[in-house]
Each structure stands twice: as structure tokens, then as C-alpha cells.
Length: 571
Image (cartoon, rainbow, N blue to C red; front, top):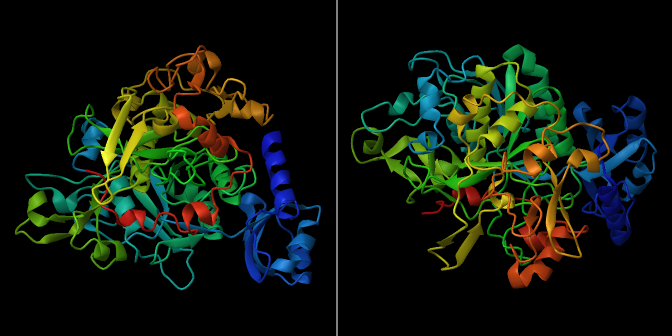
């Protein structure tokens, strides 16, 4: 466990406030039967299962990647179970949800395809709502074998097909080959159109799932990695942050995959318009995107043009720093607004898109007639931006199989485009509310994905860990600086983000992204840079150690992205 002193103090303070054992999450209910994930100091044993059973609990599933297991236990027994010295942390088995015609050329993927980089021989694990068969997920030609090489459902009572419609759309962004749209006008092709897909279903036909299912799916991806050459996991799902990533079981599972050599790409979340605490959407990154090892992706609008010069951030894209740990997120941004990808007409999302601009006409991609396409439709959100980056990672692995997960993360961030406007605004046509975005490090991360630049990067591969840095606020000045997350966690690991390489220059984040409005090149925020006159109230929410974004007063429920996936994006 990599838990720093600040995070440990936060947990203890939370325990004091809520009157619970310090090894338990503050959002555990006080009554009834509770589904929980218990993490131990070592892999769970029969003796520990028996201890839980003696307290009225029932084992549901072992989760070796986090040295734990999921159980159903009486809420009244949680304190007694937490008192066992082998118990590190108890948290609820929380709910998670699924929160290219222009997109691919925007990130220069078309140039990569022309050079022969297509993801062939690489497998991407899609942990989502399942994947349905589609012509675009076959090999060369419609009659070729499916590139979905393995499927498994972690949802009780449902097979691995996609009833929600989200996982199939994500799969198309990752690896669609454009078979059903290769006509005269437009081809809808994914980022790695020859990659194989491993379908691990964790979201049901309503787009809902649980931590334990995602953790089990990540473990299965690691177990299958040698068999199918799984080098990338895509997680276009998330839920609120309730505790430090160092004890969050979902984040710990992500790190398990990372330690096993798999790049884990996660959507940032769609909370950028959340103004509940006068933060202008800052501090809304979802778990497990709050983990410093993951590549966390925000969403850009490609503006329906190939040129990158007019592209803008989507105002709904979640912003950092992360709650509790204050990790600098997102790491990178990619197209995620009104992206065309694969549809299955029987799915919930496709049905709910009827009568909206999410549907496209057959004639749009060279088909006959003016009917709505049953093969493609549009979705928006950071969950659609994430597979753009996951597919890009697969292309880098194809080019150089020896690259590590950290080297891929560093290369994608270093070569990202860093030219942005200072601000942009969008008016919601329904409410008339104007949302203004500032292009700082917590909004666009290191910059805008450019896969061709990454493939042509001649810089020697980085060594060490590419964990995202931590933002540290100076209470006397109100300025915010970057700190090495590894150093704060006292892990003794080196970092690729050395101060002479990144924090003191524009190598990764760029002079327009890494704001230097106050003296000191590592200053990312000045007291008036983001908050203006509202700095005090906004800062106390983002930087307060007891802030828990999972509160129902912020999100309304544990379901975060289900409704967001049905909006029409931004114009």
C-alpha cells in the first residue's frame, strides 16, 4: 500500500467525524446487510473468510489483486471485522457506471494507418457493458473471423453481449475497421483497426455495475494477458472518489494491472459543469481515474473538422485535481464529443437516441436512402475519449513491444499538442447557462493526443515511474505547485517527471498549459488564476482534506454517467 501521511490523516479525521473504525470507509451504511470489499495485509485466507462468517458475513468472491475479497456482511458487524489486525480497509462494493470521421484525422491516426500502424497482434481488454458482433470488428473483409477473441460476463444473469450499447460503441472507437462505412464519402474507423478485443462485461443492460465486478475483470485481463497479448485495458466507467487512491480497491486493482505491464486508460468523468461547491467543475475526476498510475483522459470537441486549430475542450469534461489526494489529472485529452462509432439497434442507448442528433443517416456514409443508420451513431463523453488514447497506446506497443506502461504514458503526454486558447465558453441551448473553461493543467493535462507525433518521438524512452504528480497548495500565498507523488508517498521510486525535465520547463505540459502567472516556473495556479474573487470558497472545497465527492449532495446518487451518455454533446 502506498498511503502518504496526508491521506492517512484524512482517513483518521473522517473516521473521527463519522464515528467509525479508521479502517472503514465513511460511506458504509450503519444498518442492514452490506456488500463490501475487504482488503487484507496479504491475500485472503480461509481463516479470514471464517472470521467474517463468524460475524454473520458471507463470502462472495476473492479478489487477489487487492489482497482481498467481497462479502455480504451485517452493517453492525463491520466494526468487529475491522478490528482484526489483518484488515487494511473495508469499503462498500460501490456502483460504477458507463458514464470517427473527424476524430481520427484530428489526432493524426490516418497518417499512422498509412504508415502501417494498425494495432495488429495487440489485444485490448474492454471492461465495459459487453461487445456485440459487428462487421467492423471482423478481420479483413466481412466474412473474416471476429477480432473479439475472448468474452466473459461478470454480471449475474447476463451473458457477455451488450444490452446497454456503450461497450460496442467503445469497441468501435478502439478497433473498428470501417467495414460497413467504406464508401465514397466517409469511413468510420477506430484507432487500432486490426487490434484484437477481449470482452469483459461488468455493466448490465442499464449501464450499472459494481467495484467487485470491475476488479475481477481486471484480474482476468492480467490472467489472460500472456495468452492474448493484452497490453492495454480500457475503462470507460467510473464512480465518485470516497477515499485516497491508496486504499480504494478499484484503484489498487488498476495498479495491479499496471505492475503486470498493462497500460490502463481511464475516462476522467463528465463532471466539468458541476458547480455545486463553486469550484467551476474542478475536483471532479472520478475513480479510478484518480489513480496516479492510470492514464486519465478528458474530452475535446473536434468541431467536425480535421484541423486541430479550432478544437475546444468539452465543458462537461471533469477537471482535477483529484479529491483527497490532489493528483494532477487529467493526464491528456482526446476527441470525445459527438463521436460516430458502432451501434446495435436493439440496445438501450441506441433506442434512447431516437429523434436526436445522435443518429446519422445512411446516406451520410455512402449508404442508400435517408433512413437512420442502424450500424453507427454518436455518443459524447470522456468515456468515448478514453478509447482514443487506449487505441493510440496499442499502436505504440505495435511499433515497439518493449515499451513499458510508464514509457507509453510518458511518450503520449510528452508529444501531445500544447497549443490552446486561454479560455473558451459554450452556452447550453436548453438552460442558457454559459460555461467557461480555462485551459490549465487541471483541465487539459499535458495536452491534446497526437499519435503520429508519439510514433515519431526520437527521445530515449523514459525510465522510472510515470505516476502523475501531486498538486500542493501554499496556504500563505494561495499558489499551487507540483510535487513528486512518489516522494510524498515515500516509496523510494524514481520518477520520469524529473524537475529539470518537466516541472521546470514546458517539455510535457507546455508553457500555456503549465501556468506560470506567479514567480516560479513550477507554479500551476496563482491565487487569482482560477478562482478569482471566489478563490477562498472554491479552494476550501477542492483542497479540503475531508472533502468527499461521493456525497449524495454532489452527485445525487452513485450513478454518475448513465444519463450523461444520452446527451447530444456540445455544438
